[in-house]
Length: 474
Image 1 (tube, one colour):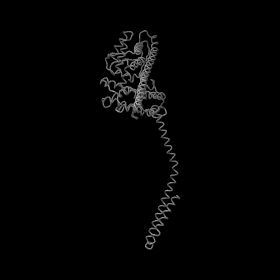
Image 2 (cartoon, one colour; image 1 turned 180 degrees about the horizontal axis):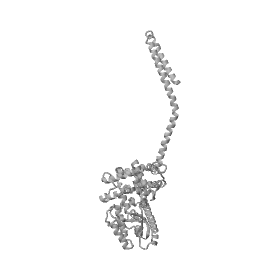
Image 3 (cartoon, helix red, strand yellow; image 1 turned 90 degrees about the horizontal axis):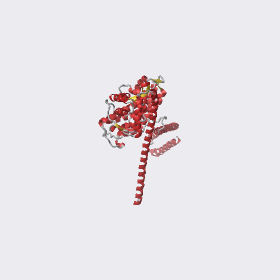
Image 4 (cartoon, one colour; image 1 turned 30 degrees about the horizontal axis):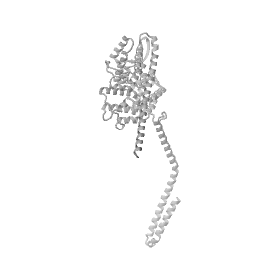
């Protein structure tokens, strides 16, 4: 290759590299635009919901109620999101809480301090929340707006605040699940009802102050806050639960992103324990989901077509022991695990590390392997590429087994005939051996010994020819 050809080839390679870089930039820009568009759409839906809540309340009560104050705080936060302003927080709470609740409490108090409502009522709420933040409650629109604030990374308290953007409670695919499962009805002035999610319910999920907290949470989620859960509702909601958790493990999440920044040899033991627990949870979900569904459906609805919380609680303990897994508790377990890891980062500081290659990161390699495993394991309910491949392999194996069986069926009669011929050959060989031995004995006699050389060789040839003839006949 001469110099001109080399220069031409290098220019082509540079052009291709430049085009690839441009393509990557375009993809990144389109992703950013898509995220901004989704955030605007989410904000618009929250504003509409807030307006719907506000209209009937204004007609029934003149003095501001809890929901009205919450709507004012929600509107204030929505303006911040639209203007893309950053909120800088300081800790004003008098009680220590898990990190994410600590930030949420300070954020709500910040919103109240900037609320244009009646100062006396607002100041009373602020002082109450500062002394006992577990009394804080949020409407659906306020809770969703706070989640959007964190996802937009517009809140700053310390170095760890950025991780709340991917925290399970604030993710757009789990935010509604937590609210619809944990909300309670609250009566305010003017006898107005509103759905509220409180810090107390959220804190109970982390602290597990009662043994049946997670069981009640899962029952409410699967039954859609009904007193009893039917078989049809269970199957429908469990399928949605499976899809949500599968998407969680497949896409980016808080722990998986932190795993990508940590190398096993340099991470602390506590980190290793959290990563190991995450792998166990992920592996259990991927391996036992469909088996659990079959077992649970059989046990839950063996005697009746519906069950209440007490029946659900006793049966779930039985199933988890039999299958040696806690698959229904995966969501609260992950919620607790992420909260613990955030608290660990706050207490021990953040060790910024460069992303490492998969080959040197044990946990990342294991997570990538599990990500590619589908929970349906080739069953007809799923049409992903992995399940299609498993079904093709299964069908190929079945077809191979079928051909083997058919071949054996055809070989069977031929094998019988071969065995018969083999027996005949063995019988003739024995007879020939007997005749040969008799002839040899005869010619060893002294009177016939002189004639042996004249007869034995021709007779041996005749016997050999006869053996080959008999074999050909067979």
